[in-house]
Image (cartoon, rainbow, N blue to C red; front, side, top):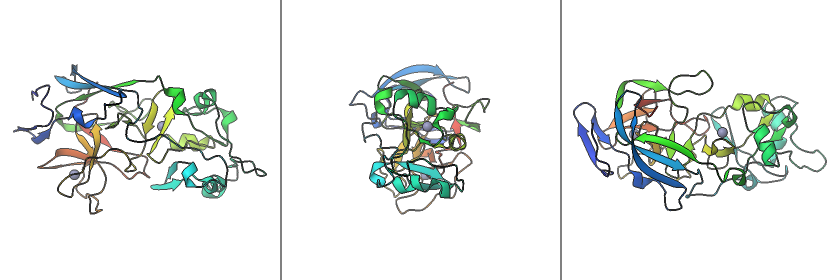
Length: 308
Ligand SMILES: [Zn+2]
Ligand SMILES: [Zn+2]
């Protein structure tokens, strides 16, 4: 399973797993300095040691702006807010959505705006962000639209390791999605702009506190620990088109297998996906297709070894 350090674009044929495509570091957007990639040997979850890409990211996307998240007034249109994910659907968080929350969730406790001015109640400072954008939402933020701004996390960096040559295992790894979860990693993968494809947002916790923490149109929001992170693939980040009508590539999973959009160019869903949302073809080898944006999810597990 050896792979040469600079062998970025080749197809390595192995007898055990068929076509295996190595991670191509050149696919990442490194020109702004937000993403720095080096090579390091690391121990994988299957006990072997393998060359890996060490990806140090500021999580500042070079391919698009960040935000907006919370609109300011119930009269604001969709350009002033982000999106919310519910029941498999994507909703624009415009002023009307905020105004309608009590009806949307069939619960009269929702009242996130001033009835006389229409001004939406939202977090305003980094301290608000720290208290409201975490799983233990402060009680004083009931009926707040929660948003954290890029300026709060300008010094955050995150480091991820991805095996350069993915190694498919006989059984898959499930993700650790919270305290006491499964043994796998929490992060699902990384987009080409260096922003992580994160675990599903804890929407039930957010809603239980009568808050919403919208995602921007790119499917991301910010917390102080992770910085800017994706919870949905909305099709607006760098993608690599395929020549055969297959869905475009949007990043890599933590096991080094590539992640593609959900639908083919013709708009069809792939019906032969395994429980991880992966399948194999002769051009791309094993790879994943992301879940619907409205499902607050990317992929369901890792077929390959990852860096512990
Ligand atoms: Zn989040
Ligand atoms: Zn495919």
